[in-house]
Length: 113
Length: 117
Image (tube, rainbow over all chains, first blue to last red; front, top):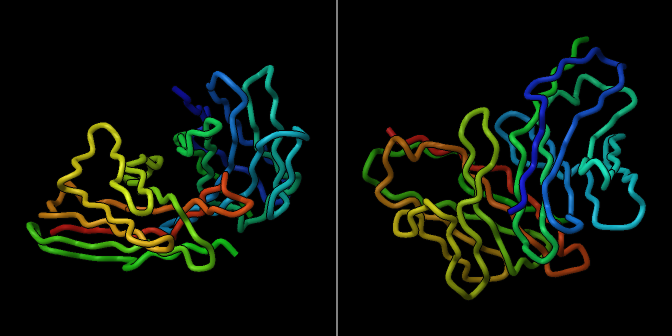
């Protein structure tokens, strides 16, 4: 069975600082990987996804993520955080052909002005 | 593109009543829709997978007679919480998977907050 671990429950960064949110997955083959963002009381917005090819994926809002097979990781990065980035971030994995997403527990990002 | 709506966004009901939540894909067709439940400060837990024109597949521990799912068209799925009780209070989120070029991606609705008194 596939699983996702987000080691950091809560991260606080200063506005303008760089950000890295960690995600580790467990899956037997090459997974489909996603990062979603959720603002309070809202649904999930897709930031970026990885299916195959270039392991560095660019997403919306200036986010990027790198797939590292050797480390079973798909960490999310942003070079300069904005106050509007404060939200909950979820990493998710889908086994190829399974059509089902498994989510990590999420990382809450707080941004200090 | 790829917009998913949910209605209602919030609902308060008395214990014992039934509540219907609609999930619509507005600008694409979705053969598969998913229903999730999210408790406060927790992750999304998949409840069931809904395929157009067939019975939904429920995850282990989810009562299919309590959470009725209907996927009557390629743009609409409904979740009915029957005889709701306070412990059913939660945030329910649907997602839809398109049949087009981005079929590997799920697009999420804005969620429905259910409070059972």
